[in-house]
Image (cartoon, rainbow, N blue to C red; front, side):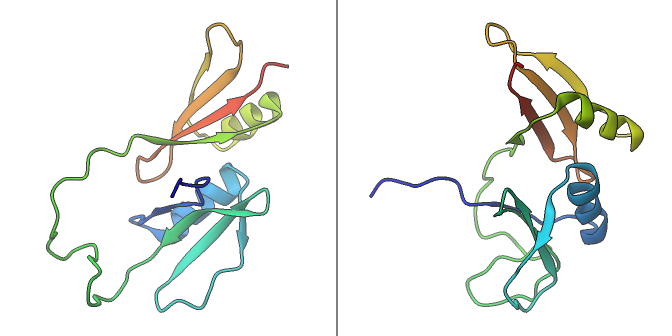
Length: 133
């Protein structure tokens, strides 16, 4: 049974609205349809795909480990960053600068692609990849 493409990733932010604002206002994702789940959250869409799930506080339920409760598993390793394909490097650069978002810019050796590296409000690394024009 081979795996398919990555469907989404989920973040449990410290402040749900602040993270929503970052991913929508800074990165340009769109708030979209989300099932009527029994906890707050947002599904944020990129290119029509619910790529980022922001999850608010959940109530403890059987079989689900909820933040703030005792872990029943060992350390799962460090989550480093997420990456998005992006376009219009100059427009994104100006957008980040106008919103006061700090980022590091680099050029990929050999390909000449441009990359921006930044952090969301909870310190999750975000990489934006722009193909060489």
